[in-house]
Structure formats: C-alpha cells, structure tokens
Amino acid sequence: MIRMLIVDDEQFAVEGILRSNNWKELGIDEVLTAYHATVARQIMQDFQIDILICDIEMPDEDGLSLVRWVKEFSNSTQSLFLTCHSEFDYAKQAISLGSNDYLLKPVDGEELAKAVVRMLDAIKEKEEHIRYSQMYRKYASLWDKQKPRILEHFWQDLLSRKILSFGDSLERAIQDAGIDLHAEDQILPILISIEEWHKPLDTRDQEIMEYAIKKAAEEIWVNNHDGEVITDKTGVIFVLIRASEFMAGTAKKKPDWVEWNSIGEHFIRVCRDLFYCSVTCYVGHYVPIQELPGLCESLKNMERDNVTETQSVLRYIRKSVSQVESAEIPDETSISEWAASMLNGNKELTIRLIHRMVDRLEATPNIRGKHLSCLHQDTLQIIYYFLQVQGISSNNIPEFSVWTSAKVQGLKQYKHWAENLVSAVMEAAFETGERDSVIQKSIRYIQQNIEEELSREHVAAYVGLNPAYLSRLFKKETGQNLIDFLIEAKMNRAKELLDTTGMTVSAIAQQVGYSNFSHFSKTFRKQFDVNPHEYRNVTKGAE
Image (cartoon, rainbow, N blue to C red):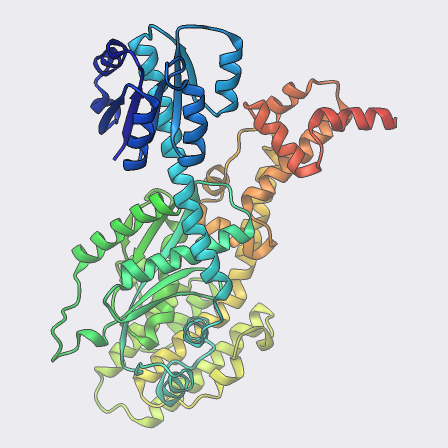
C-alpha cells in the first residue's frame, strides 16, 4: 500500500491538494493529512508513509526541520516541499535534505501530479533495487557454499556418454553415485535456454544468476515431483523428471502437455520478473535412461535451430526416418545403409536407421546369438573404417576403449551401444569442425560490419543459429562472451579512428554504431581506463 501525507497549517491548502488530482488513479492508495508538524510525526510513527508533501513555513515547526527528522526516522520516504517564497536558501536546504522537488504555492495540480509520479517511480526503482539486492545476496551465499554434487556428476557423465548406458555397467554407476534410481526408470528432460540477460552482468554475476535460475527451476518444474536440475558439461541446464513416482500403485498421475506448458509459462514469467532474463523451455518426453543422452542431444539441436520462437514452451516431436531424409530407404536389414549416412555426416538419420534396423530384427523370427555377434563385429568394422577415412584417432573419442570392448547382450543393448558409439565418433569427426566454422564465420561477420549497429541477434541470424545457442558455443570455444567480443571489437575500431583520423569523438561514436555518446564514452573508458578525449590528448601529447 502506497500512503501519502500532506502537512500544511492552512486547511484550505490541504483541501486544495486533496481535490487537485485523483490520487487513486495515480497510484496513491491512502492520503493522510496533518495541520501541525507534531501530528505529522505521530502519523509517521503509526503508519508507513511513502510520500510526504510538506509546507516549509509553519508556526510550530518549519517543514525543513520536520524533514530532517523524517530523513532519520524513515529514510525511504520521498519528500516534496511547498512554499510561498522562492528564496534560493530554501531551495538549497531542500536539495541538501534529499527533497524530490520544490514547488511554489499556489501549486498547479498538473505540476504537482507530475512531481508525485516522479516520486512513485523513485519508490518503485528503490524497491526493485532492494528486492534484487536481497535476492542476489541470498543466491550468492548459496552459490558460494555450493559443493560439486555426485548426482550432477552422474548425469553429466551419462549425457556425455562416459557411462555405458546399459546392463550391469549402468546399474553399477547408479549404485556408485548413491542414487535412488533404477536402470529401467524413465526420465523426462526439459532444456532451459537462457536467451538474453536484461541487465549487464560480469562473468561471476552471470554464474550466480544462472545458479538462481537453477534453484527457481527446482522450485517450479520439479516442485513435488521426483527429479533434479543439472548443468551438463557443455553448460546447458536440464530439468530431469523421473517417471518412477507415477508407477502403478501411486496416487500421482503423469502431468500431460497442458500441465507442463502451464508450468513452463509460469517459469518464463518468473525468470523475466525476478532474474532479468528471457528463457525458452524445450520439453522432451519420457524415455528410458539409456535413451536420455540421445533425446537431450535432440533438444540441443532443437534449440540450435530455433530462430523464431523465443520466450516459449516448445514440445519436442520425434521425427520419423522419412522426415529426417526424404530419399527412399532400402528395406534390407544390412548396416551398410546407415554406414553411408555416417560418412555423409547425417547423424540424426544414422540414429533413426539404427533404431529401424533393430526394430526389424526384433520382429524377425529365429534371430540367434551368432547373428548378434556378427552384427556387433560388422558395426565395429564400420566404426574403424569411418575413423580411418576421417583421419581421426580413437584417443580423441571419450571412453572409446570402454565402449568398443563392452559385451553386448541382446538387441536392446545393441541399439543403445551402437547409438552411443556412432554419436561419439560422428561428433568427433564433424561437430568440432562445424563449431570452428561457425565461430570463424561469426568473427568475420563482426569484423566486416564493425561500424554497423550490431547485436548478438544480428550475428546469430547471419550464421542461422539461435542466439542463446551461439552465445554458449562462442563462450565454450573462445573463452569470451560474444557480447564482450563485439564490444571489444567496436572499441578497438574506435581507438583506431582516434589514432588515424581527425574525426570528432562524437562522430567516431556514430561511426562505430553508438547513437548515445555518453554510453560510448563509458564503454570506451571501461575498455581502456580513459575516456576517448583523454586517450586522444595523451596520444597527441606523446607525438
């Protein structure tokens, strides 16, 4: 509730102020009045007063004295002085006491309304700052105390395919991590993509805010469900909901898409209002743990390719083989059909073909162990041939020897084994080069357009990627934020123009895409520890 107190020894003046505006419409919930400073003090002791309108000349105690007391008693109160005189001394004292304004009587109603609106804006800004500071301190403290969690390490290793995701190997990894989980359990993954920060944050502040977003995701997405929020080894935040809590015999039912969508929309609003960022949520579906790495990778690809739907809750729809590749696929159960897609770099199609081949084999009668053994050996031969053609050492592939020496029993295990091994070798062959190509393309675009009004979104649109995905990729590959790189490049160009041309500093600011000179000057100082004028004077003096 916003309260305003009017203090004036003249009753008609108080009534005039009361009638001058519709205070409710302006955002004032309650207006109190006092005709003496003593009464005003008593009111302020009984109520929280947000805005004080006070006459300076009063018989028992002048307004300046009252506001000095108010400043000590309620520092958050915004004050406005009224007076019949325009002496500079009064104005000077009013300013020294932190008064928001100084108006002459008789006060114009419209002028008074504008002054009150300015004070309301100041109150709102201060409250937001206090709320942000409290929230920041809370999560900074938690973040400082946070220790690496075994649970998160388990999921990170699983998603990066460092754990054999089938049979006894998976069960042992779960037991070693001390997790109340079973290999046959199903998991629903949700990728949280931080699209954009609405406040400038340095690296540490950004890490703290990302931690705060993870905690908020635990409270909102996981809530009463069985699950956790983790960050994988590439820096992507995933919410992982376990299906074990919805097993037969429990009262809980799996939330449907409508419920997940509602939760996601609420989470997006919370991130916007409390954490000053835009997020998009990519919701998968329940899959066995063995299939989780593949689905999480598909969600990453979905994020990478999303360049239109931001601040949304998006549902992952599994593509059929025909959607992945429109060309007709042979019906033979031979693995040669997906070997070609490996060499062509089409990982998604290769995985779909592996699944299709296994489905056909499972429906084929008289499949024996010797058939599985031959299939296993043929797969390894294609893997080694692929590595040879691509010129890749097996040492560059995580846990390669563990995967290739694993004993595969049954078609179900073979499917997970082949999918993980193929994914690992194809990532080593193609994705590093693709990442390097995207980063180099982005850098060239920035350098070639350095004098334009460039943003992260412009660069992402040029390379055809989602801005959040590109920013994360840029940071991972270069160790520098994309925005920081862009600013640094612009400031280096500005410095070059200061060194080599006679252009005015304001003209140079315009030249490198800064319409706001003050912002340009502050950014330049932050980069080089001097403002542009000082830099030019120093360099000219040196010459």
